[in-house]
Image 1 (cartoon, rainbow, N blue to C red):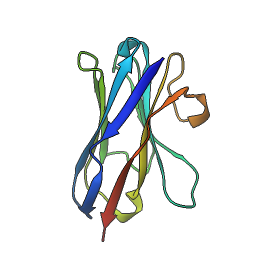
Image 2 (image 1 turned 180 degrees about the vertical axis):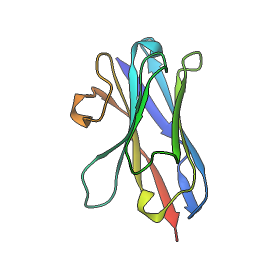
Image 3 (image 1 turned 135 degrees about the vertical axis):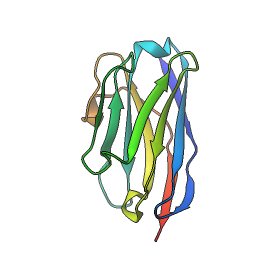
Amino acid sequence: QVQLVESGGGLVQAGGSLRLSCAASGRTFSSYAMGWFRQAPGKEREFVTAISKSGGSTTYADSVKGRFTISRDNAKNTVYLQMNSLKPEDTAVYYCAADLTYWGRRHYEYDYWGQGTQVTVSS
């Protein structure tokens, strides 16, 4: 198993930046593909981005492409989400997720989840 803890959320003005971190403990971090998802009040959980086990492949939702960047440091057991040019519509709770065999857009495929971190973008 792996335990995930997100951090780095907060309140930022539109156009600003935040970097989220997701620290993992437990089994070997490099065994897991990682994803970031978000959920706004009254909305379904939404795919943001995912990264392969090695970090060599990434995929992004169209809504964040060119503004957000996912990366991972397997030596530090951490995955990051750099968010630039933030918009009010990016406001949500952001979750990181991990899975041994799947990486992609389907949230129900991921076995492990963090508790989430709130990101609020003011206009």
